[in-house]
Length: 525
Image (cartoon, rainbow, N blue to C red):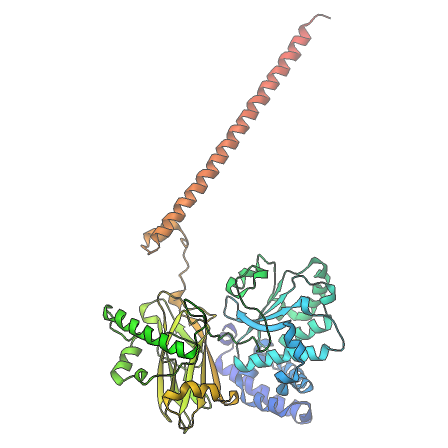
């Protein structure tokens, strides 16, 4: 944001055009074969890509062009556009040395490097580099424009695990090949014996990347990552265990039900029916008469005809939901909002609206998944959309749940061939993955969710005076604080008494010495 404010939008647009024009005239005209035509086309059409290079080079067009030239040459040399899961040796995936999983406190995806699993080997270094490129390219396509937090877990690693050429390559990936991708680089539990090696690494980083470097012990890592996304070996509670296949970068998992194992689709339908009956009974006793949204479930569920909302019911369901202001233009559906669902703490900020518009000539099936099914209710979570029609989906926070920047939503869509709504479950089982459109949304916290800064922040007196509902908790904290102060005061008094006693003993000894000296002088020789 600071860069955008410093360089006005018109100035940025002009620099983007200047960069493209100079690239065409100075780099492309005589050396077109240096680059992959797909990368050239993307550079000419994707403003965000060009702006990424400019931002990383502080809007210096000359420096940005050098970076673009080096980046595009690397992409062609490594065949990045054609790297697939099958083109990487299977054993690399099986080691679990590199993978994407979880989020940091700012909502950035975590890119893990388990250093102890890496062994220097000149025969496999090229494949390892392509392996890293595969993960970065995969993420760039799934969540364009979203930064990564790189975590080097150096637990139980030693000098035999350090390959300086490979480390330099990883740094260049973020320094040159993927601009603006790096949120921060966290080095965890680095052995002291590697200090010299990392001094060399820091010299490669450059000032932009050095500012993003963080060193943390196991005790300090929670400064950047919550325990829910840390393995037990780093003091966390994440039950995730790496295994392959499949690729472990998709956090949109099928959840466990409240009282047992994962439900089958048939059991899920029955459970959903029970929930709807329960919700209807609860709503009859609620002063706010509203249709309660259905519980989010990742298991593909068939949509019953009763879920099709009538006009009046739709208005009731969407009342109070935050309307989207941006739109993503997709091949099957236009999705609004384009990137973020916004939530706040106010009663009118606990619902957000997703609008899906069918831009095809066929019926399109869709379903919504989330990384936090226990927090959100989505209605409808699965249905279909007629050609040229739109569907409104209400996403609401459940109970007292709070939205988090780590929360994500995945919208999946595919064209249907004369399939009725009762056949959705079977349709999703049979549809080819290559025909599925995917679009991801992240959560944005409104300012109302962020407590205002105050000199009395966290003060027990301030909490009591504000009349907050956690009065009992605050009172307990005050009492505990008083007990600690009393204990410290008693300790101080005890120390004071001891010091006074020592002083009295010293004074007594001093007087005794003077007395002995006096009597010694009076004794006749």
